[in-house]
Image (tube, rainbow, N blue to C red):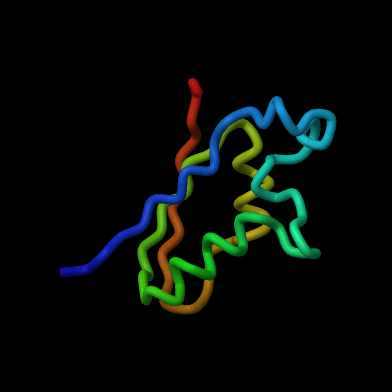
Length: 83
């Protein structure tokens, strides 16, 4: 049985405003790396290759950062229309 991961990266990040005015909160840096990279690293270390990322209107920024993933991975992007 193949294990899949769902990474919920939605929300408006209102408590992080003004940093999140133009940037999705999971792309904000923490120790010089976007926060989402830490979550992806954990998923990858678990050997999970099928990853769905759910996010808000900034999903394009996340897709640009992650792209199609590493070789052998399947990355799916889902737009969260309502928080």
